[in-house]
Image 1 (cartoon, rainbow, N blue to C red):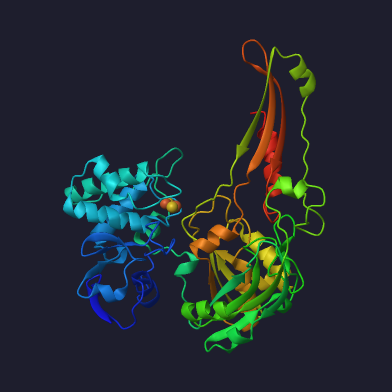
Image 2: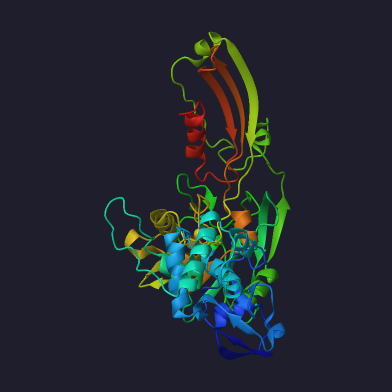
Length: 482
Ligand code: FES
């Protein structure tokens, strides 16, 4: 137990817990964003006794007598200053990192009203921004310093004519933390659900033992593929992705869901997930396209390991290369790339008549609707999807990950539910930018002007199709330059 102040009000915390959980779940201070819960990203930065601190690190029992400040606790004038400065500097995009950046800025400017550029940069050294980069955020901090020194905030430009410079319309809600991302939604009677993931990249699921988890007080249900009313398969362009791996079927990667547990709170959920036991028959895995193309390779999907083969040709490259003065052949490779959006995937769903409503952080609202309709076996008018703010995506939130799971649990339990990935789950589950192995032959004339290009590209789309076909096609169309 500990007593301290939050935004000037005295609070008493009975249960020792991470500060971020107390601020968000108990006090509803949702400007404190949960980007990783591991002290790495800085989105949950608050001030403790004036020092910027990541709220996912300290336990509440250690805060006796201390003073905690979040963006909600800034004065109205400070909120105006930071909104204007971040808006004018163009420092806000997805906004998920911004409240944490503002708290770093405040800690700096409280002690140093006229900082040098390097000092502003140093103040945000522990905070990651994936969208905006840091130059504009540093500009915003320096502009905020100027406004605080002047003691007034200019009027926001009102000229919206073509070519005029205007701030984003959502700057204020993103700076002050009032904007709603799905994780900021708390509903009465809301369940928390999460999938138990495969223990092996490739294994046959022999049995799923859910009895112990179901018997735990506070568990609302444990659902398997057998509970899905419609089709188990989802996928934007190719329906090859199992909502859950059914008993008897084979897993495709470590991110595969085997069952979904729903519980009254996140702690019970974690305990219940640990009580689910799955019997597997481990099978040889396929780790890359070379292994996938080998003779007698294990099949990742029943119909084979090749998603797409594209051949794109313009003119006669072989003849152009043959006539070239110089010819060069080189091999290139690009790695997996994680999109690293700051907001992990999260969706809230609730019953809506005899259908469902899904609130999500989504790159394709209608895709989520279509895939959820198929999985639930419902017509379009019974599956509604609304996008909340999206804390970055960059292509990594194209596929459904949590949306259809949330919809399924809401539909089966008739209760609201939140499904949120931890940072580790997020990294494991969503597809990455495709690694490619490429061999290029280029022919050029004596001036270095390229005459012809022949490129062979092998792309690794991972366990599922996702957008692998169009990505390969784009690699081919771009291979020879513009
Ligand atoms: Fe910084 Fe999106 S604006 S992470």
